[in-house]
Amino acid sequence: MQKLILLGVVTLFFPILAYSEWNNIAENEDGKIYVDPGSIRKVDDGIKSIWTLKNFKKPMVKIKSRQYKVEFDCENSEFRKLIRVSFSGPFSSGLPIKDYFKPEDWHSIDDDELFRAVFASICLGKN
Image 1 (cartoon, rainbow, N blue to C red):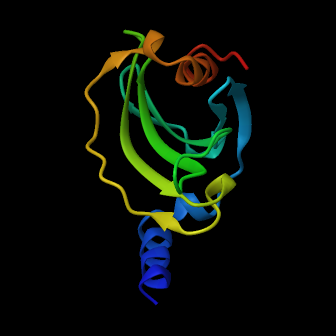
Image 2 (cartoon, rainbow, N blue to C red; image 1 turned 180 degrees about the vertical axis):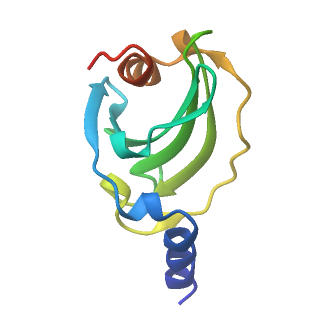
């Protein structure tokens, strides 16, 4: 019963998680990353946010996919993850998995191959 309540709360407060159209952007040995192009928002001059989804090729203990709300600083080539929601199934299916996440500070886009591809897609217009 508690899991159903948690799922309802997640869907209520994060409706974008329930109604997304995921486009595959990149893949590496860890997994595939997808974006929801309808979620792109201009936050400030040169800064955009987007919802992303990562399906893991080698699932962690219980986690097979994660969604991230990410901001990209298109002028300084930096990014930060603001929200992370983990799921027991691929493509945000299954049950939400409770895990602790603290929003990150800005760091170089060169730190993450998959998010670098997302950066190129939304900041440089490359697919």
